[in-house]
Length: 448
Image (cartoon, rainbow, N blue to C red; front, side):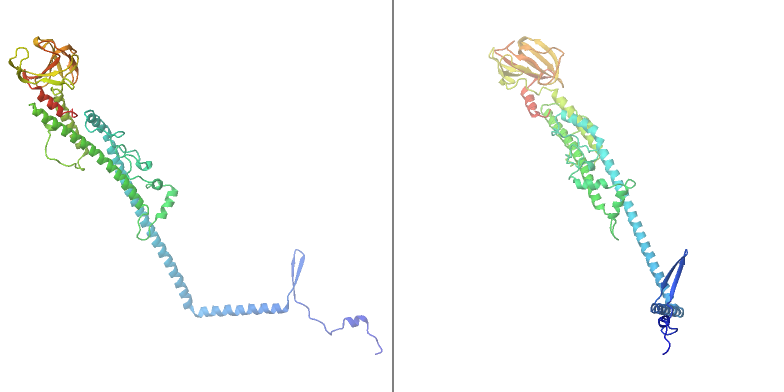
């Protein structure tokens, strides 16, 4: 031990305890180096994983190569899935086509019904003028008094949009009333070619199931049914009104004819407007123009017979006057002998107005012997009336008077014992009993 070792020999021996160099990875980029150290254990693990993956991959590939039936089954499964998908698409497309076709048919049906309703509404509206003239003519004659605020049944321009409760006589309202909700739904409904994009989109929410129908059909049918019922009601009301007016005209004409026959006046009515016959109820299928023509004929008949009746002396010359002497034989007040009294005497104070008993023409107005101041009126059917012993004459010869016209005033002129009216009815210069004509006039009160 005679020689000592240096310090450097002690720190770094030549080969004792020398470690192996570590594995490093160096990356160099743009003159810059990056060094990474790899743990040998991690490197071994990573290599083992890669090795096992390669063995599994090649093993699976070899298995598939030798088992080609698996690949064929996979292809067959994919083809089956594809065909099923295509079949489902075809079924959906067919279903959509059916729904679209049904919707188009529904829209065409709706358009047809709308056109039909509009035509019916226009047909009812065109009756307005003719019915107005006939109603005015009928009401002027006292036939079928019209209720207040009611006239000819005429449809409104658009009953669906209004949604109001309107009397079916005055307008073409809806009965029963369509609610606001229904009107709101109806306003969104559009016919083919007029629907907006939103409405078309909403329409798909009504698409049916396999065996369904167009979803809005139920409401549409109900809505159109209500409109059709309202128009039908208007039509029926119009027909009933025309029929009732005609029935009233015929009934009154028959009564006038019967009354005139009772006083020996023959009515020469137009052949086309005969009265009578068996009762026949209103036929709703009868053409409306035929009903209007029938009403026109009935009004012509009524005009004819009523004009004839008004031209006859069937009125009363004095209102509320007492008869003091009837027509026929009586004791003459001047000489006491039985004589023929050719008229009827009415007791009344001097100055009481004397009325014409029928339409006619004044043929005499002045003094005439024992009649005193007298007025003679020429009527139809060869009939005349005389109003004698007047205190004052209010008409002139040639003047035309109407029933109820004041022609003079009661007096006591001529061969008279006191103020009264001597009233005569003559036919072809032959005296007739005035009471018979006055009774006939009372039967026709409210008819003429």
